[in-house]
Amino acid sequence: MSGGRAMLIMLERELRAEFRTRELLNTTIVFALIVVILFSFAFEPVSSEARRLGPGLLWIACLFAGSLMLNPTFAREQVNDTLSALRMAPVSGFAILAAKMIANFIFLSLAELILVPIFDVLYNVPLSAVTGRLALVMALGTAGLVITGTVFAALSARARMRELLLPLLLLPILAPLLIAAVGATASLFAEEPSLDRTWFTFLAGFDIVFLTASWLLADYLLEE
Image (tube, rainbow, N blue to C red):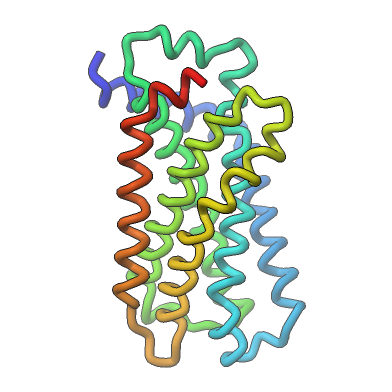
């Protein structure tokens, strides 16, 4: 079986399993919205304050939502040792990881599609003029979060305290990504919005480097 076909089959399985119950998706959306709403009470959301603090608050909400969503990435495979069965199948380890990454990207992007418009209303930041560029920055930042998060979820899948281990492993690696994402978003939130090419290039490079590393090390990651 080709790697692409195997990936699509496993991706369909991931999407069907989640959309059947929507437990993880609903929990993530509610959690992210609570974070954004609570932050809106912490300061007066006037235009100047929102432009200055908004990018960081938006990505903190995305990070919390992503951490909640990525933790159980391999939980289903632990119940009946499905991961071992998948590793015995004639498919590459990267096909398994890629299916998980794409599924997580879809789920987190759906949460962000609800989160960003509500953020726009609560923080009084006009985003209509930068919708396309903001979507591109969000996509690159979310991809980096999902790629690294899925890899470390695979590493910590068999650990006893994986709920605590995953954030400890993930947050130091994600720090450069979050700084770049906040910087790129802040340039779009400015009074004269423009996409900072330095931060944008860093985001793209981060995604490429970690995606390549996961492709090269996928078999070793899943064996561990």
